Length: 406
Image (tube, rainbow, N blue to C red; front, top):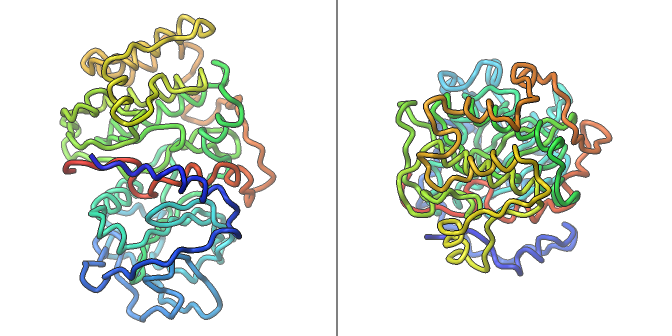
């Protein structure tokens, strides 16, 4: 197994202010000997060569008045993209003004950008082609783009535009500026049950929608749930998600995800299905309610052993219904796990802990969450400044672990 966790030293470097970071010399990438064409899902390359700012070696994205990249027609991919994403269907770098860097990882960066024509704010995910090709992650990026283009749910971040240049891929998504559920949890320590319930229900709704469409998320955790200005949960990061053509057969044996959120069957390298996502939800909910994940270890081997063998300890301050829900979601036998029965996610939605949730009103966004992030306006990024780099240490494309085949 190959872990993508970076050493503690890298974490210390990334916690420094941006102005203090000095790029380290990098060995030139042999980009001329790898296939850099992603036209099948990102549209054709510009017919006009990019200027000096579009460099394979420059780790930073630079925009300026001299950028005259030709707009990229996405007509060749309109069969996959929803009409409202491309709307006639040419978009390029010159259509956006870069405002702030809000996240970065081993394979690229995320910027807050403004669309020039409308003044709308977006998050632009910029991925370096050479790195993902050399790391054999190109299929994951294409899959992420395809899934984001197809999903349409009130609690899933939406893809608005995508395009490519010679050296980079661009995904332009809704800018959700309440920060991650993880960052809010880090500030508050833990959430009361009444605070957790609405956001947990929104996550259940999003994951249920994915499963109904034959999609496994495979990396469900608080870091991958953003909060919008009203406090609604928005599921993001589909870099490890898997879509199945046969919605009745959603089994995979790829060991992927973040270890402390992995289901036992994933750790063992066995075939797994939708139940693995519900386990990850259980770990996330446990962390929300107690402030800590149920299984921790000094290294990967110890952690995996605890996931497989240790019983969960449920704090007495949690309600009986919370105990029941967590026991059901964290059932080590996937066949007995809550949400993996004949009725699927309805089994979770019907649990006593969610009895106060009106699911129709929830999915109409008519239920106001109790946890509302502090935001001063649409351009506000204060919720990304604290812990931003801690959360983005792992790659933007593949988080924590990739082993085996897809």
